[in-house]
Image 1: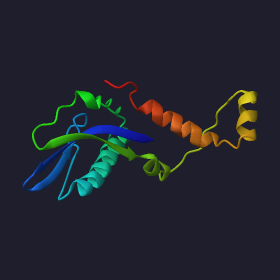
Image 2 (image 1 turned 30 degrees about the horizontal axis):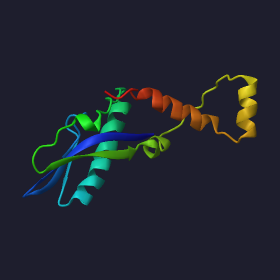
Image 3 (image 1 turned 120 degrees about the vertical axis):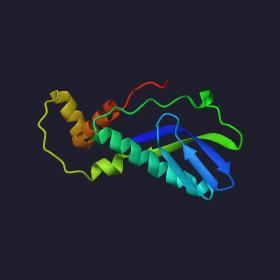
Amino acid sequence: MKLIYPAVFHEDSDGVWVEFPDLKGCQSFGDTVEEVLDGAKEALEAYCVTLLEEHHKLPSASDIKTIKAGENAFVSLVEADITTHFAKQKSVKKTLTIPAWMNEYAVENNLNCSAILQEGILSKMKLGARK
């Protein structure tokens, strides 16, 4: 599941730091924008994984056009993928029922029903529309 949130990057004499307006307390620091961008992706992933594991919904991402950056700052989108984290978790077996025609389609097209179900549940865990 890929997540994209707007972030505000600040540059000052100590280096660069980034904050996510929609994710209170989610920040990263570094010497260069490139270093902070890597840290921002890690911070975004860790923050969102923690929320989901604690059974909280993810906040909707604000429209980047509505975020104002101050002096020596700029706004950019940061993307993180939490799929890998959840793929490493212990799995449990579930039995489900689908229509026969759907099963035939899945078999004919080599679809992994388990993966599709996981993706669907992850997408339901996230709030839908942007603000």
